[in-house]
Length: 340
Ligand code: DAH
Image (tube, rainbow, N blue to C red; front, top):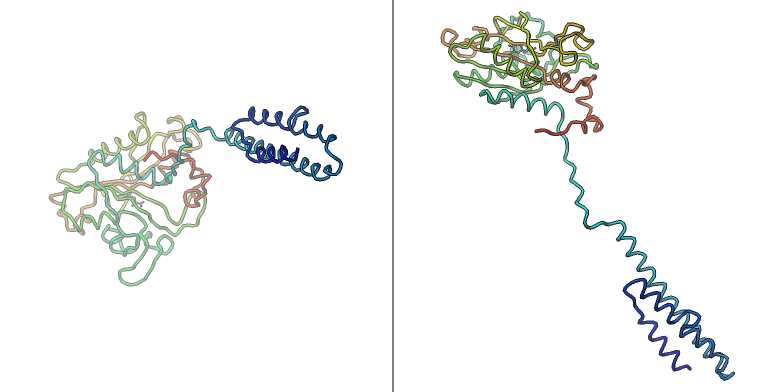
């Protein structure tokens, strides 16, 4: 009997199964009522009294070993089943989430793209400028209020003040100084103004400036380019309206409105019931500006325009509070799917 027990001990320790059915067969073979180990327990009563103690211990050892081995195998199958349930290897991979672009970047790229299609290239200029490039060269008289402390952030005050540019028109100046016409360019960039921060004003914002200088450039060319832009940006049903205005660097000057996107021109709170919303300033480059930049106004003429990127973004996305653009709240930013 001892021999048989030892043999079974050996067998049991090497017991394996490849699935739960095989495992159940093993359990029946060894541990069920009619199983081999149970049989040995039945035979135990025939063991000689003096051997009972030793054989009894061996028998218990065998029974425990068999049970332990079966439990281990059972656990292994349970784990395998669990992983099989949780990983479906045939499933397509999770798509990698792409980042989103900032709404102001999206709008800036779209503006550049629209003008790019009619031959405008892109240039940038410095944000820290001097009085001459931001004001004097652009025909601002010395006492013009834009130069005032209330509007401009000054870095250094002396004869040619160093300051943060208040508009991207300064890049017009730098471009004309550098190259002779034809010039057909847009200048995107950040500008700074000393404003109290609120839902509708910030101390910095973004503009895209446009400049076209060549022979025989007329106001009709300007109007056509802007009409094209409005329709590309806001949809083909968009209408434009030019109102006379004043800027030191353009003559004549105008402000452009587009028909309100929200009410389609019927009048609503967004357009203050006028049916129109202002989106940019524009005009024919003042001959003084051309002259200041080394371009002969008797040979060349040009048009210029400047628009606020935040304003266009607000029209497109109806962002109620300007501050959202610079707070970097991902709940806001995640909503802008990258088209560019
Ligand atoms: N520089 C103007 C501003 O910051 C915008 C502007 C108006 C630009 C008319 C122009 C222009 O080029 O022709 O408000």
